Length: 315
Image (cartoon, rainbow, N blue to C red):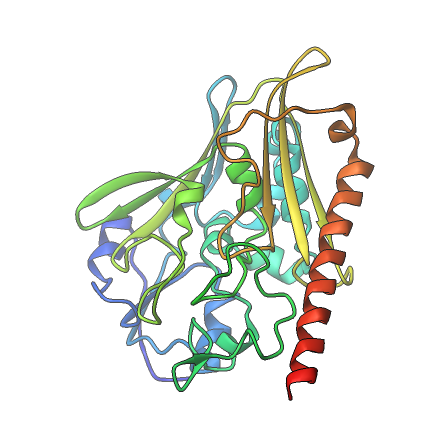
């Protein structure tokens, strides 16, 4: 790990003043479950680390009936899981957090950190950069590309979005608040994720001199919601593919729906953007959605197998 300066501000304004205007010079520390590993492996080598742990306004979970939910950026996943208000009004959000099976990460990992964690792509984690390139050529298409993007992956990046909370937050229409030297701004959660075109860019639209301070989830009344995942194992791991579903009901009639996929593309993927879904009863059955997800994973495996066979034939 490269030597660095450690800063421990007490307010968001102090934290913002300590951040550089270019990526890589400074990093923000929340729970540290991702950043510390990246620094140990020299993937991230900041000159200064700015901790958020002593900034009181970034903590806490608040729910107001008829208004919605506020998640402080440094609220932990365990605090989210334990919140009776979240369990009652946003059960799918609890489901998503419970998908992180490690008790240690639940205790230390923050909701803001979950959204801003870096890709789990093994080429990136091995030091080949965000675009996973060697001598200007991507290693992914002709290399070991298991668990890489199957949607929106025309290049130059091929990693998948690793966030556990992003799909359900997007389906719920949540927003994030970002504070920087130029003031505060709000973004829909889906606008937080972008596709980088070079290694100097990042996969998030937050600026290097900004801090994510909170997540705001609107009130959803009688909406039904759920999170579905297909995993290779139940131990600590990221899902192979996931889906978050929010249905707005009028009695037994579906008035509107949002479906968001995770683990399948660089950004969280909405398979039906801007369209009115014609839903049948099977969309209301958990088993049917799980079957659909399993089918998607089989299609991914078949695609990778065909790609491998083509490489063998051409070699």
